[in-house]
Amino acid sequence: MSEPTTRRRAPGMSTEQRREMIVAAALPLVAEYGAAVTTSRVARAAGIGEATIFRAFTDKEELLDACMAEAVRPDHAVREIASVPLDQPLDGRLAEAADALSAYLARMGTLAGALHASGHRSRPGAQQQRPPATSREESAAVIRAAVAELFDPDQDALRLPPEEAASIFLGLLFSRARGEEPGGPSTQRLVEVFLHGALAAEGAGA
Image 1 (cartoon, helix red, strand yellow):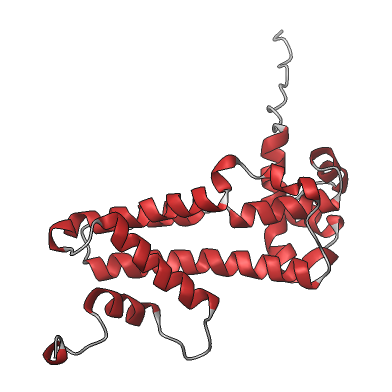
Image 2: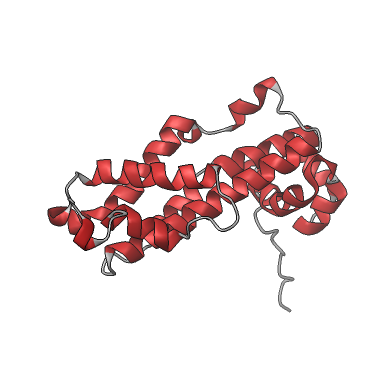
């Protein structure tokens, strides 16, 4: 007679993994409902019990702060930029990078706007949730380095070092994002003007 098979429980999530899973489920809901989102709605989206949220977060305010901290992290955009094929033309590379960064800025702005409009204000200790690499200066440096790599295959044809070209390109892109209006320049037009200038070829230097 064979012995009964002992069932073994699958290893549970760590607290950090649970927090990440909950934040991922909460982000689109917070963007839609702001601080009015309920933890029961987040729990349903995450496929967990509501009590699980409070084993990972002290309260809903801490969860909202964690969502904002996640939204400002540039990791996803940097990964997208790093995946841009370097064998395509430079204008195509820059257009893909601009789209990735525009989506990152839009997500961050949408979430911040939703939370602000619904009355949420980060508590004094909320900044401590953010890893060191997400400080504004370090985030900008990580993004700049990723974009600079897109210039590397064409650096012999550049008038500027890749790092400086990346800084100027990002300045144009972020300026457009801050003051974007309906009918503003498309990503492709911004890339064209950056690479070739605003003057027609026959008028250059006139």
